[in-house]
Amino acid sequence: MELIRRLSPRSSTHPGYVATIGGYDGLHLGHRELLRRTFARAGATGTQSLMVTFEPLPREFFVPAAPPPRLTNLRERYRLLSGSGLDCLCTLAFTQRLRELGAAQFAGLLQRAGVRAVVIGHDFKAGRDGEATTQWLQAEGPRFGFDVEVVEPVRIDGERVGSRLVREALSAGRLDAAARMLGRRYAMIGRVQRGEQLGRTLGYPTANLRLARRRSPVQGIFAVRVRGIRDDAAGRRGLPGVASLGTRPTVNGTVPLLETHVFDFAGDLYGREIEVAFVAKLRDELRFDSVEAMVAQIHRDADQARAALEQDR
Image (cartoon, rainbow, N blue to C red; front, side):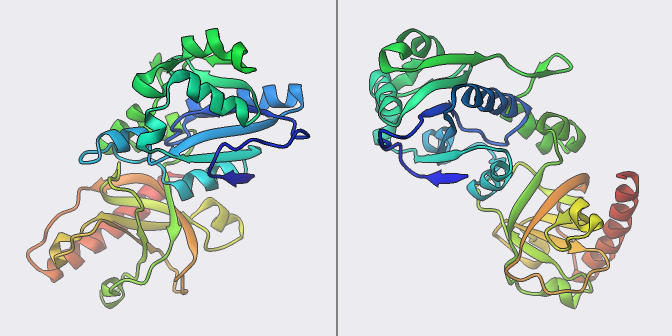
């Protein structure tokens, strides 16, 4: 999969693109249906599949003081897409200049990049004041050399699958509901960072990941499975563990951190990229009166996590 940062003109020999456009935060089942239709159309027309997405996400740009919780950062989106069959991922910098493009300017950008068809959702909009709506692109797209395929929402139990509903389910600790909408367990990916090594002194060494997002959709203590440590069947499924995502108020922490203790593992993970999948929420983060009280609760959390993971077979 090619990663590009601009929609630049392609050579005359390039076959052109079928493009899908959007924030694609979470890559849930609705997003996957858009991708499926993009792949099918590209395959039928001998063109390449292209996803056009944005960093930061538009809502992060519009409301920087209170952005929505981010489901997937750029690393996570790239990893999820890398095995999907997508030919090209274009991550545009969402700036004031991009925001102010009129509908015709936005369509012209796609035309110059060699887009031959666009696959979007029914409620799509882009450009200045959202001028480039689904309806506008359907009507005006042929003038710019592309047609538009509109994909209706995917629904589960009659409810439309969307990033907002996934965020709400995760925030409420309804991990199974989020997994149904995502088509997989919700997970975070990152490289293990060297921390203060407090967990090691307490008997619970942890692999620490920085969140690479301004707000997380999950907080608290979780039973988890960790991939990226071993290549055998158990490792591919995910090694069992217990994780804390929060600021660690008992030890006066301030920066949100994902700290994961992998059961029955004693190796060095510093610098390794791992994926932490959230299986069950055990409790919210608490401030304890003493480190001893915190350690006693960690023991209980570990026992509860093992029991929850026994049910996840």
